[in-house]
Image 1 (cartoon, rainbow, N blue to C red):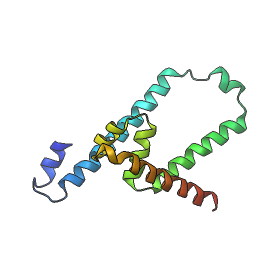
Image 2: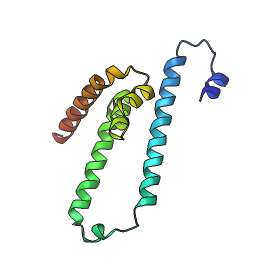
Image 3: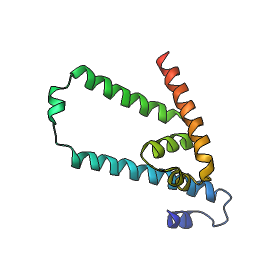
Image 4: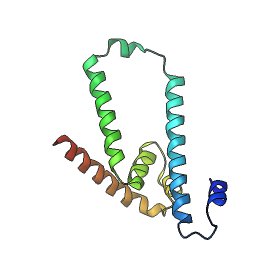
Length: 128
């Protein structure tokens, strides 16, 4: 990512830190998504015993909930969505702080704000 920036932008560009931050967050999120999906594919059998006996309505409901969460995350500011994805993906406050480039002592406050925004969007969507 640094090489890409170096080749395509002036080194003293005023937007350099913001550009690099955004690329780092997106790269981290892509890595998490890829790793999570790969782990799920490798660890789970194609059809488990519980899935065979599971109520189809519950499967549909869970799928709809996942889709709703993805839609809401897509409407949040990128930093808030990244914060929620990283924290609920199992990262510690220190790891989240490093990934987002914020002080570790601010992660809790930022997380509470992101959660509040997420819940507000969920509520707004359910009233549509």
